Length: 307
Image (cartoon, rainbow, N blue to C red; front, side, top):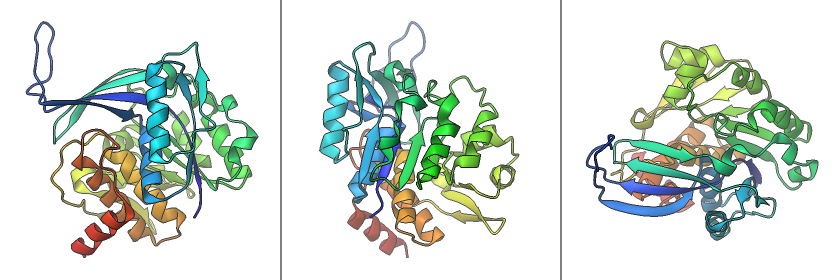
């Protein structure tokens, strides 16, 4: 099975679930539950890959603090190779507070170590044993962003395939540099908001066509509407799988893991989309992004029921 190197951010997620209302200045609101869990798009995707049986190693930065130790222990427990994770005593590990409901979520983040990793921190030896490079949170990783295109180019030169999940841009500037970066990327995983903002497209199909550079396959994650990509220049859409969601945190990152797992096994495109959609749906059964990520047999059972 092909091995994946994830280069990205690591942080703690504090999940406040079942908010009765979103907080406003000067007022207090209640939630139904709270849980602390491994967070960050990159780490959630890595955890999802490991749960599916894909060998995965991680390279990122953590603060030399209690939150960093918590994240590291969680990643080791998930089966992720963390020998290349960098501990920096000058940093504080990032933290995200996620206020969630079964329908949506709102996030408040302290970036900390999230924005400290640079492309120069990834040595040539990092590619050893890997066949694929994945990066998430392009906009949050402020120090990695300027060198991201060169990082992907180095990986390609070493024989790796590549994928990128942009994540949301908190400044909502988006920028054209990501389009230039896609020239070195095999798979691109934006959600609908990200896709429209980056491409300027009027709808999903138009946005996909605008980003079509003849090389990169863009897979749009559309939440309850499923997913869409272009095949032969025409939109190929698959519906979402219906589950009873508890928390949508990290569902898109679990989609990435499912699609990549199938794609790296050289499965047909439709099957890759179905694995992505199934893993995204099944991950919403628990609080946080990693608690209920899918095992292969759970995916296969869901796919069989939907056939």
